[in-house]
Image (cartoon, helix red, strand yellow):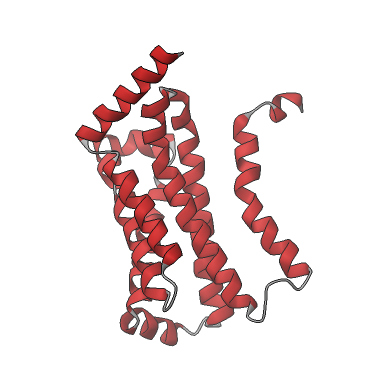
Length: 205
């Protein structure tokens, strides 16, 4: 038991489940507001985006801190992003549309924010399926180009959110700004800057 409690992955797993636990607590106490389905849909969608952005932040943080071990948490973070994406999609499929596939197909075709959201979800599936070490070995050099789709998926997720919100765009635009920053930190000049900052911090110590 002590070994489990000392394992950072166990704590990270528990933290990643907190948004779901919050939904259960709010639901049991009638705290989901006047439109519970909308609340659940919005919450799971938000945490999907948060999960994607946190996953994308691992590499810049690793370069900035020199902590190579951070990379071992990336898979779990990515899978939790997919987990909340599934909850988001199932909420729409079941609680919102009651498995009316004709209506769902019409939504996907006619409502742009649903079109891009559905595309992002579909693109996430192969990334989740191929996230294991076995699949990494099987795919070989093809694995990395496939998983670079996460950049497109995150962008589609932000667009989905921006197009969904009709009035206050503050939160979706904040997500967009964070995504742009994380993508910029992957450019060669930015990588060099991160290494320079890390070296200065090391000297300061």
